[in-house]
Length: 376
Ligand SMILES: Cc1cc2nc3c(=O)[nH]c(=O)nc-3n(C[C@H](O)[C@H](O)[C@H](O)COP(=O)(O)OP(=O)(O)OC[C@H]3O[C@@H](n4cnc5c(N)ncnc54)[C@H](O)[C@@H]3O)c2cc1C
Image (cartoon, rainbow, N blue to C red):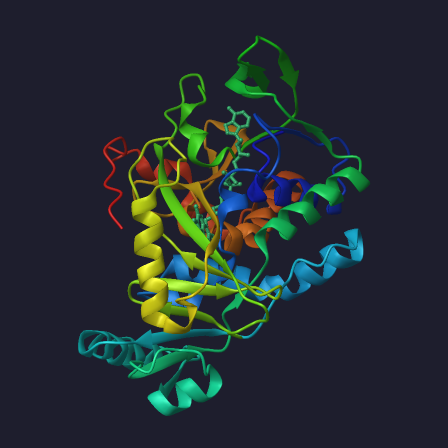
């Protein structure tokens, strides 16, 4: 049984089915895929975003490498094209400070063996002619990609429908049920009980609100992210484009997404005019050619954040059939395939990935994980 029908819960359900698990249910409080997974920009950018080559980078990179097969398999299984796009990411310098930052990143990333190219202003505008004349230079990450998040969720939902995965919407889990030291199922707010051999908690930003008996679940906090979208008649940009202050994600249908805020607003998913103005200003700094375009859509979602900003994957040693797959923060779309693989291998084959050790819930025991600083 999986609690939470976002990209993480649905991807785990699919992987369990592919590994031959017969009875799979997803309990979802609202409608599947309508929370953070619906709001995400869909960037698969482990290289543009990394600050060091640690275990987290390796996890992100591995998931990025799984994506071509993941997207192709989903298309074969469901007929849904998830808009997997390999055009890469550009990271722009628009000020002197940005250039210093880019120089620093280029030096260490090249030194560490990442695939990154440094482009002059002229080279940058040759590949993306609609960028600002203020662009001084850029880094190009050819192995970063993007996916159309809403189609990804639709494909996973379709897979569930075609493969006899039970999806129970409008089913809000209040607590995990334990019997004889093992997880036995879940109980809803209305007192309805569901029983299962294994329970996976994948409830995103709400994960630590669910009671788990004597287990101290790591605190997971919501971090609101807002995005605005412009509509262009045809696709203006080929690549995902970052600046140190924002990003543009061009979709095949001509939409250009501009994101994203990072706000401590509790579970409030409202959008604000102040955020729209800021996102628009950041977008125009990157591409003044967007100036005459109206914002056609604005939305917000809640990123799930743990105290150390890393995902929580795996179980507590005392209750092995209760697993967590949560706190993917800014990278849940990128990390869906690798998370699904790690969790499904553990459940279906009792295989312990090294990542379960690195990202397991036990790592918080020594710390006070209840006080989180969510800045940035
Ligand atoms: C603005 C924005 C931009 C982003 N951009 C990117 C990006 O470019 N690339 C990237 O990789 N990631 C990005 N992310 C992050 C990504 O969206 C998340 O990490 C990912 O969606 C988390 O997936 P999830 O399934 O854990 O959470 P969610 O999609 O939030 O799903 C959790 C589900 O659990 C359900 N649930 C909650 N409580 C209960 C309960 N008690 N009982 C039953 N069900 C429950 C919820 O209703 C929800 O459907 C972005 C996020 C935001 C907000």
